[in-house]
Length: 189
Image (tube, rainbow, N blue to C red; front, side, top):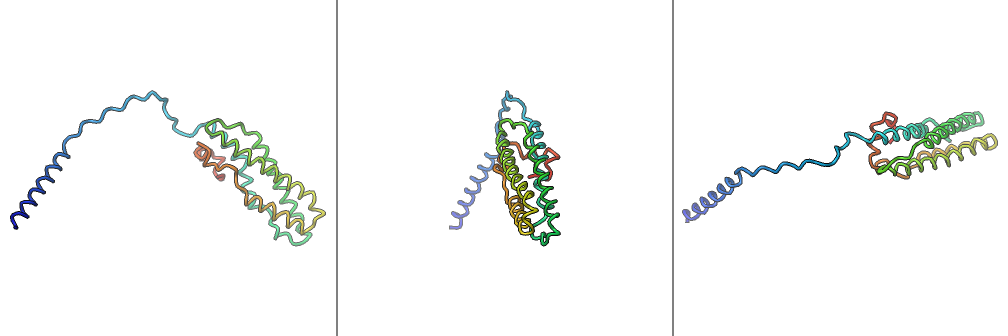
């Protein structure tokens, strides 16, 4: 019985050794790749899109940061605080005007990144609507008093904080690398 088990083990070992030796043989060489007829691939983002991204980021960067510097509604407590509200809304109006002007100057983005045009158009529409709201608030602020100033700053602040672009930059082919390649986009995302 012991000799049968030993014989089976020896046969199994011999088969395993044979299989391993057969697998270790030299493989035939792989065929050389066919020469490519395609143009060489670019080594970085499209320069035109990098330029477009710089214009876009230059236009929207201050808008993304202004929310941190605006007066908050709860900071306006008395009539003496109204100049602070007016100054804050005036600064926002000025920043909106610059952002709108920058977005209006953007050239159309070329395919395959043409979705960037939708991104810019969405931001432009939002900024125009917000500017209209800010202009109305500034006009009514002297008559509205503290309560109106608080409400205006709350609503405008909420609009700024809750705003989301109609198109995410990551969904536009090549835009994220183009933005990373342009210094103007360091704080924009």
